[in-house]
Length: 435
Ligand SMILES: *Cc1c(COP(=O)(O)O)cnc(C)c1O
Image (cartoon, rainbow, N blue to C red; front, top):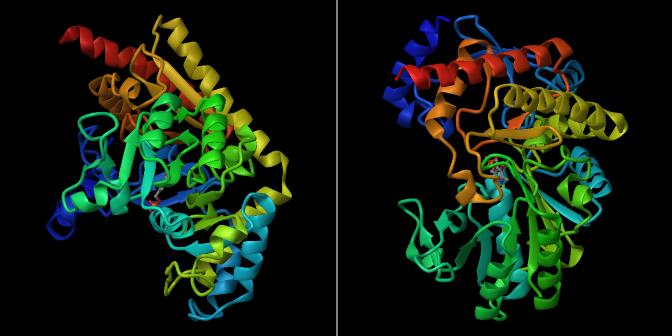
């Protein structure tokens, strides 16, 4: 497969953009080779600058759940855009959007729109700190909550010591207020909470992690977190930037039946345009300015074009309750096919899937947290990835990411994905043996 134009563009991009990309994972660093420059997409298919076609299993990391260039959304965005792009003043669409979100996610009584998932999580912990008058937060290793300083923190040397920055430019002062604990480990949470009595403002997590690959929380873990937060006056925040409107219309909280105090949203909520949101109990959200003392603002927040794209996407999902079921059926057909291939080839790699999110981990160890995810053979993954790319299937370019299926995917696409998966598994081991 020729990718001459992508290569040329990447050379130019590297001169003017750090690493040639506007978000690091796009640079293909962990899988090798050059990134593919996309020109357009339709339904479940991406087309690159050289005219190659790929079945898309990223879908912009989730937002394109209905498939690319979906006509009703294009039409709605066009109609909104002829009225002007932005006013910096309230609009009807913001009210409709807020009502729809509160309707779909009952734990959200009030919601504030922002422009990204990063902004949503940053603002949510600020609100939780303002509400509780406490400073510290607990997060979990392997969960990603955007690039806010408070989240770019890893566990200190002892599991229960304060966090240390895992990005240059994050101060130790900020990192010390974040405790990073192992995912799915309730005893670690109990100990950390006991050692920091009345100091923890919030516990934040992805209830189904997408960002270390797909790793679901155990239901008992979530239930125990709920109990601890209620007892200790800690704000429980579900970061549903990936899972919201996907795992179930009401998100992972509906799927598990565990209800957080606050929820952060992003990705699907903008239908492909830059939107995030944070919301929750009215009592907490009323701490936010202009009602309360927690400051948070945005020139383009609630932007009419972005709201229209997001609202139309959510409306379609809400008005067609069977759509997510059908999407899950398509995704589980892919999952069954991959598991079948593994079986046929006598391989014991771990396949994690919840609904339309999944990851094949190149390890024989069940993956339940970051440590077990890290046992994966990333070199095998890199070859697996390249094989897919060269055979027209666009996977997430890292072992530690989830794939996202869109509703636009056809039976023919699914068949092809399963076949390429089989061939890729054969191919990467052949290469292994000849080395
Ligand atoms: C993508 C993501 C974010 C960050 O959202 P951006 O829009 O990239 O800033 C936060 N949390 C989770 C769970 C995400 O998947």
